[in-house]
Length: 216
Image (cartoon, rainbow, N blue to C red; front, side):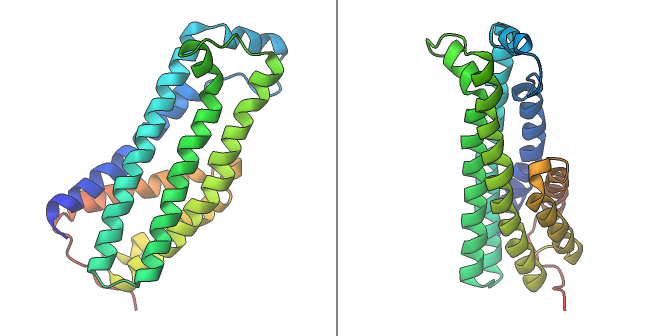
């Protein structure tokens, strides 16, 4: 795999968690689920917050698309190192499933904002505003988290077998996989984003794509 592709993989891996962080700060800036009805009514009538939510949603979707580019590059890298074709495809498909969950889920979170600002929907009631985004969070954190955990477990096993990245990244990836299994409580998911940052840096620095020493 040439250095340009490797560096593109590194760049997309770096941008993914950065855009996710910025987008989530904007899109998920909503009242707490147990907040009084009036707070939710005020939220759905606040044009500034609704526009911020939409912009944040766009950033998260862009991040998910960049993640797909990273996946394809990692798949090519694994296949070039003669990684098992079936398991390489499993990692790719699981990663695609995660990306789709993120895109579908964030639409659920911002659908009220989008319906009101980009469409002709009337302001939602407090109950709908409170509970509809929870569906989106469920898709991202539960379905997406499990898909990402599978991807990480398989991909990092292949990394350790082929030596395309340092062995410590493979072991760090197992930790990130455990974090994504528990992603429904959100905080463990931060390990995954840190993993992506680290992988991005390594791919940018190690741009020639030469295999590292495989783990025994």
